[in-house]
Length: 71
Image 1 (cartoon, one colour):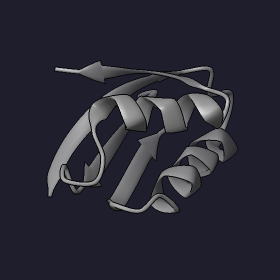
Image 2 (cartoon, rainbow, N blue to C red):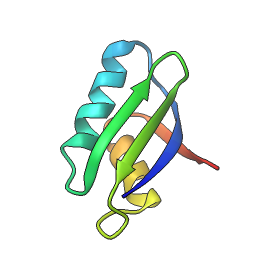
Image 3 (tube, rainbow, N blue to C red):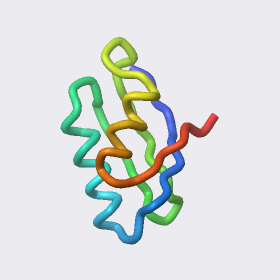
Image 4 (spheres, rainbow, N blue to C red):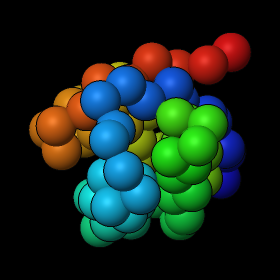
């Protein structure tokens, strides 16, 4: 398992953060997602054998938000 943080744009409230968490946690390979509305970020713990950064950003975009990997 690895953990990476992504910058999120397009969140308007804490419900948006919960929506992102739900979408990610429903994805096979994601162990945990912690979205912070205040910081406009999400920290994702996932299995690198099943997912990659690009797939995670695609899931977030499908949910209606933009995401950029923070190094």
